[in-house]
Image (cartoon, rainbow, N blue to C red; front, side, top):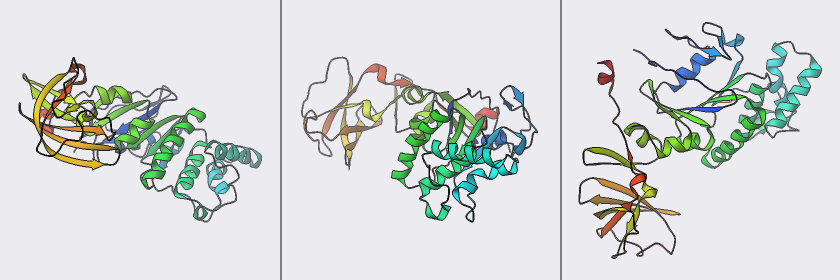
Length: 325
């Protein structure tokens, strides 16, 4: 069985590059090959123009940050951060200087003497990050490093991690299955599916112009409808929901339908509309008092509309059998 088939990637120096995909899609396997924990059966892995295929992990200019932090509980924060430098036999004065620089970069100055058990989850993750960057690797590999944090802290750390990456200037290769996380932090994103890459694009292009139905459905929420023999995807927030005879603004493509579902979600409400012409749309509306036509009711006939340029034509996604043929 092939875990990753025909991957061809080039990551720029200083880039925050994310490999995004569901579990089992091949992203972690690819990361492990870059790190040297697994060897590719064909092809090469180059780092700064040098072929490192077959080079053991400890001889590659890369470091890895994992989800579980992997800090030594019996060591202080400072000792954890210095550990790799001690192994490399860096002298004591330089170790202390580089340790303090790394902790300052991750916003933890003054934490040298604390133990991991005294820190929050977010602080422990930053210590793990400091330990990884203190060796000044050319590439930092991050395997779902925020997965163990709660939602609020994870969102905070996304912003911090992107800021830290900009400060240190090291190339980050990041693995996640969280679409919002990838869109928030990345310069470019590679979407993995079933051992291959479906699309590599900057976040905005990936979201606004998905290459196929898999990308459209995996990166955010997307509606897929078929009109005139073409499959199109439209994001829920791009669709106007018009009720009580509200006139459509000029330039919209409009279709009639009936509300079959309403879900209130705080700042937004999600509506499901069954279209007369066939298919179903999810529509998102901000919960503001100025919503045109007032609040619709389930079962009500409505008009939905979107600008033609907001509907992207997409291709389907090949199955394993189709790829094999």
